[in-house]
Image 1 (cartoon, rainbow, N blue to C red):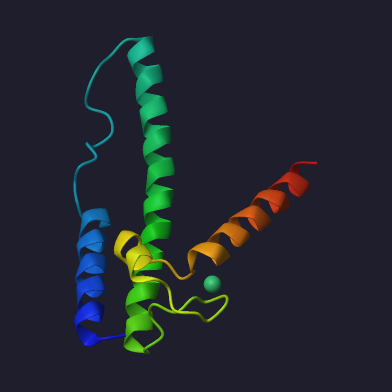
Image 2: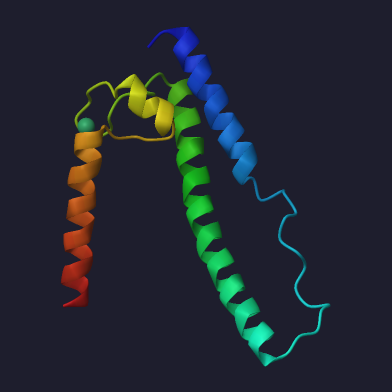
Length: 120
Ligand SMILES: [Zn+2]
């Protein structure tokens, strides 16, 4: 991959990393406000949603770190599954991806089947 492209994806990754960084203090401190039972129920639901989102953010942050590491060892932009070059359009949209679209879809189908088996 050309260095100029690599630098572009790197800046995209770093930008996203900053956006997701837990250093931000967007989440207000717990407690300190009073509300009725319904408000409290809503607050609990909000907190639960926030936790789920943070899990996703943590996974995304991990993927971003892996992508940055793969830039260091020169494997960035190559599908971890089939070793083909990931199209630029895909890297532009999801610069932290490790898989080409075909492999991603195949893996998603696999993981869906896997979870169904666990449920059954
Ligand atoms: Zn692939």
